[in-house]
Structures are given as C-alpha cells and as structure tokens.
Length: 129
Image (cartoon, rainbow, N blue to C red):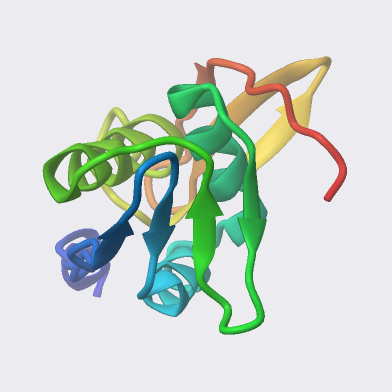
C-alpha cells in the first residue's frame, strides 16, 4: 500500500493560452484548479506564485479563466507549473506528492504524509485574496 501511494502519478494540464498584446489568458484554469485540489494545495497559492514569478497582477474573468497582465507562452507556463510542484508540493526525500504546506515558527514547510520529512520552502508574499 505504501509503495502504491508513493508511486502515485499526477497528470499535468498543458496550458491553453490566449495571448494578447499586453496580457495572457489561461483558458483552462479549472484544470489547474482540479490539479491543486488533487495535490492538496489552494489554487490561490499557485495564482500568487504566478504573480510573483511573472511580476504581474492576475484576476479571474467571468468564465473562470485566469488573466495574467503580462505576455507568456505555453512552454513558460508549463515550466512554471513544474517549478511550483517541485518547490511547493513534492517531497524532497521520497518524491511523493502526498504532502501538506504548513507554516511553523514563521517558516513555510512542505511536510510529507508518507515519510514524515519536513522541508522549508521559500516564502511567497502571500496576500489575502
């Protein structure tokens, strides 16, 4: 059972973008929402991560699509998702995605539910959304 949990695979959504002159719209944002739910993260954390990474503001439109106030492409967006998962989701010890993001003593930590290891992660400027 433990081995089966450890080998859990997640399917990453490929970014579907509408690229304009000054902004990018992620048209399949709900796929990212489902992924974040699957890996036990609030979608707002990934949205805030994108804001910090691209140094821009984001918003949701009426169709539940994320609007980035900057230009990007599919390859960069897929890299951003992989980087977020490696930094804030995957256990550094056993590579499991069965983790929690916790704040302990002013430090943000990824705590693995399988092996019990805790790893500190870079603090994002979480803002209230």
